Length: 538
Image (cartoon, rainbow, N blue to C red; front, side, top):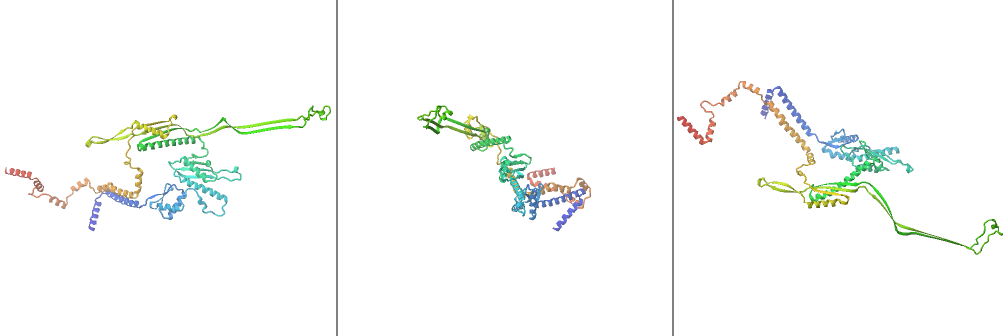
């Protein structure tokens, strides 16, 4: 072994001595670069894989998380402007559980932890302000839990209590949402946020909650409750849902009969969005019923004398001018009153006609036919061909009747249904198309091993395409050097080998090759020998 290393070192030293200055510099650069690259690959493969622990953190949460990681002596990295904290993959779940036990991350704003360190002597005003701050912070954290929301700010105006109800001021709230890039909230989600806030604040009605986004667009508020744009969008959404419901009903039925992806269904609805209220009163004169009856009768019989004569002083004083009184005369008075109330038959009809009444329905259905496989040709030239077979008229009529029954078609209303049979474009075999999500998931599973494989491939290709060509260039000899060496005097060893290979006098050149040829072909060799003998005798 020492002799081997000694010869190797001597060869290397001799090679370096015969190299020119340019090649010597290239060799040193090659050796230095190879060593540096190898060391970098070793250091890179030895570093742990960092993955995000939390993202979109506030400055307070980032500071608290980093301080906790420093206490536990766990390496970390910051990215995305300090909003993303990364830790080694092997510590990910352990760190998350530890931070969760400490209540981290708390999210933006201050929550009810403001009351954890309550001091003595705090006034009622400060307590109310802290409660309002804590309620706003907790609502912001809750809303931030939505996948579409990046950050939230909630402002609440608490209601003021008063001895008189008319003097009480209702509570109100305003919410500012910052959505993630490419995300948006549906109307149901916005209404959910509104009802969440209104249910969390005392005496806060949903119409007193205003929601806007970071661009200043109003998403919810009392002002747009009865606006024309809101009504129009709701009507379009309702019509779209109704059409999709009809399409799903027809398509699922046809695919169960014809097969998957064998039918295309499109439905168009014309709806009446006019809201009407109708009240009707109808009376029936023939239907009379005595409701109440009242009879009143009065009769008076007065036997006292009734004065007669000319009224005046003379009559009152008596004498010749006094009035005569007939004692036998009597007064009779009679009065009758009869009241009868009848109840006439009456019918009151109050109808509220809802919006979205169906005016007209149009359904278009395209179904695929059947395919028949036939063998064309014979023997080795035989091959399979797929031919399209359209559906019969009777079968199409049955399918059309099924579609009409499924969507409740009313021909008197003007509904139309069209079912046609058209060949579909053939699709690729789904088994041969690999899913991108599956490929990515498999790659992520072997990400740790791929790192070392990438390092190995890098070393291999670097040696094949960089190091080996450079070594060949360094050890190669140019044509000028070859011509120069040929003009130099030969050494003793070269002269001995040259003369040793020359044949001696009296020996035939190529004797061994001729003997092999003669032994390999006997007949031709015999003929050749006879020809040589004949030539010598001649």
